[in-house]
Image (cartoon, rainbow, N blue to C red; front, side):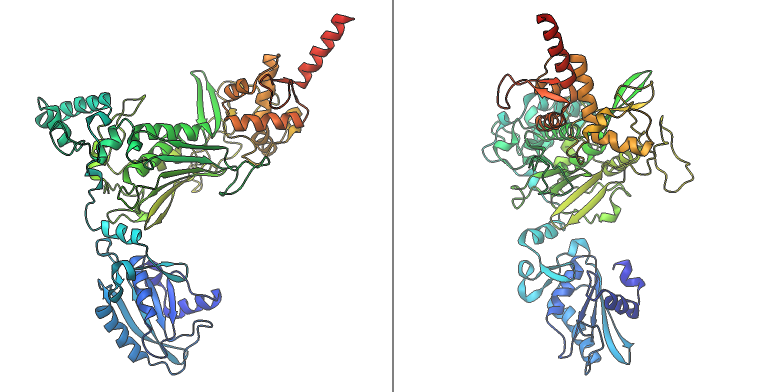
Length: 577
């Protein structure tokens, strides 16, 4: 039962309904003038499959006034009988008859069904035709996939142990397999030391049997395969970077995606490619200390890595979902990572990150990923201890960012990371923090304060030295900022630096280069994507700071600073005079 239902009295609920002028996600009103309405069965199913809720019988659905002629006792008894006879399984419903404005109403508090009993459905319609969920103020029938997800919660799914049709040992990466076996022999010698390779792979759930013709399991293919998408093309990761805060927004040039990619390969490669993509499309800052330079990005690598690892490890791999990718959407204010499949094993959204839960939908895959190595680092893909979300939250807090958010439906889980700093102030420089006694204070990222020329400042001072997402993604640039000199208030410096960081960098780079530079050299020097580089150059040309050396589609097109071009022309005139 949701806390709102247990805390609020009937009069308070009706007062809120009247103030809002409509029903809510937690409260439904039924007239009941002609007895028990059949639609109440759908509402009780919806509340039981969701977070619980309350039905009030004996009120009008427009003004929420008592219904004249309402027989409260008759409806009370009908509701009690219907719960037992017409709903499967029977939800827990607390019934009461209460006095209200000179009349009587029937209140039915429907408790949420335990996860291992869901879905609750109207018996005459069956599970796939009579299961409902509450969305807004209405009851909506669950899809076949949604019902299957709820039913999978009752048992340990075995989709990750299924054999891959037409697969064989050659579909696995031999080096990755050897690394796995070596680690297994060291960690558990009693099970793997001196054991035939085929038997060891069967015990590790990499293959389905210990014969030469053994086929890899889905878990084995995903963790160790050369190219799993040969068999399951959609079991990959898609990534888009959007120049706004919602899909469909376009930038000034009509571009809908500043980056749009599909990552393929086994899970370790998918994780690496995903983290790299977020870095590539993030703002980058550098902190210069006596020990050297440290790059800092919008989203901590640890948080992104844990989020994408969880998505790939805990996603639904049933036949219903094998056509759905893990999706990454990067907006100007947040990163969203969405996987098919709701929460598994009774985990509640409010518990995520607060308790270590290692309930895994894909037990064989999760166990295997404990031993499989990541490229570049050689560390394991995961710990499989239920601590991933806690590490994600800690990394965000340490970077001064908001805690991860979660959006959960019966068929998906979305992790939302926001890059805006929490409690950051322009006084928080050199790693300083606000008073720890301030309840709103959290560790914050150092403020980014450039010099007017955009050059690096004294050691220990952070400077934003490059971004991968263009300034257009952040709301455009102001060409005049590149020429601004003199002191400015910290707030003004913050705005202009965010808007013009690329212009400063480009001018500084081209000043050092002096001769014509190609767009590829700019792209490499500023760590930008190709589309971001092209937009930056167009803005600088429009502002009169940069001059192209050839027409737009020429292979010989390069770029000069306007000041450099003036010097070149003056030098030529002097040489010919």
